[in-house]
Length: 294
Image (tube, rainbow, N blue to C red; front, side, top):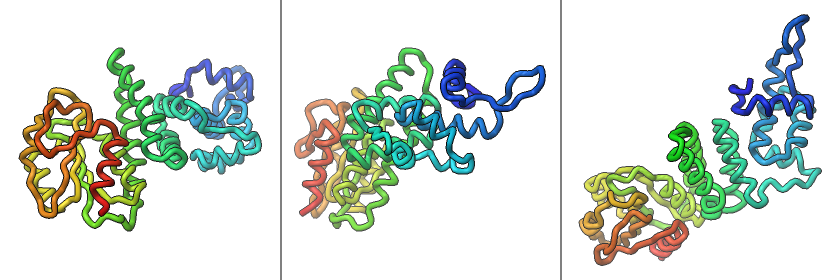
């Protein structure tokens, strides 16, 4: 059961001893056994604890709820409503980032997605990236680099981050810019998560964009620019030493003009004439927004 839930066996024993959420089946002369109902209540308990709900409240909700309703208590909105009487603030301080780390470590994509969506809704895209998502990605990446373990956590978490940002970006129905912003990674750059954050932050301002993703060959970017006619282009490079700024000079000069931005810490200096350097996501979004709305 501990492996199934992604928690320590000692944690299960604590939940059983303190809150009565333990195995309920009994057989004479045998160990107590977990039932399907026990599993549903414990999964609900774990999901709420990962989301930042105090364990005592999560246990009470999981124990008192009808089993048929437990699968529905999985989004932060439901949890927030369930504990509203106690005036519990799920979004205070670093609790959200800690909850996201716990959910990711448990390999719980539903909880990860719910936490990210809720953070975007309450904080906005850029603050969610800076205060919740980026710190968690750094922590997960550091664990992988130092222990060579946890790559599965990083991959699952990255998928949920991309999904949340894409859903937000695709919810924009009527952009205010007639020519979209074009987003792409440098030819050898694999780190595309910042681009999805930029796309979602632009959508937050009602600005439409097209995201080409990671490792876009120079020729493909040129072709996309010629077909789309973007108002601005952001080429992202996260990793130092792999991106050639000369390629930026070879991008086509369109009419009407499309401003070229080089984003991320991976670009070496100097950049070609006319290419604008943006270091942070907020700077990139502000610059792209100004270039896209006339």
